[in-house]
Length: 202
Image (cartoon, rainbow, N blue to C red; front, side, top):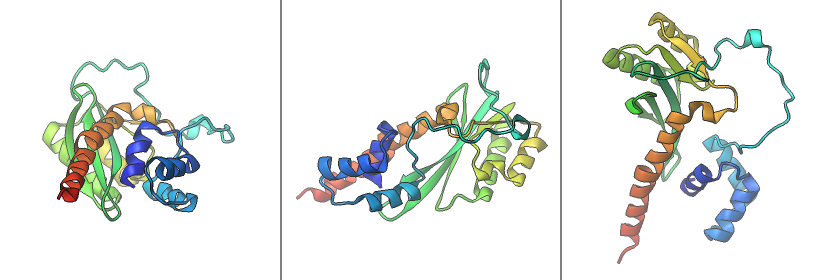
């Protein structure tokens, strides 16, 4: 999963078959398509490509639109973004949730968990507001944690405008997505590779 995660960050267009070829031919693993498909599902990976527009959503039913398009972000506390990523472990996954101030690019708060329950996200939000005050706009994806009644109530209770990415539009949340790439390559994978090197040394 670590190898898949690292390569997928650079090549989000790699389908299961192509990733299987990469792992077998380039890295020397002996894995089949069935196993990689299972790992893709476990890690929540989905190949990025244009798909047929078979479902058109009623605009009236889309409760929380994306508010950042064309918005001038001019000060700290104007816009926060939040997201969850996975950290591959020797066995299974851990999840990291973080909140970034878009103007300063500062990570205001973060937490690690072995599950993605909504209470974990709510506690992070509440603690961050208590420490930094409420932002004007809170942006997230359409994950079930962020759309839960309890999470929305916290935002509304502090008078925060709610912004959500369009479905399947990862670039709407690009500021925190960039942070995920940095922390994985510069910290998580770098430490992992160093430990692997020390372990294999005579």
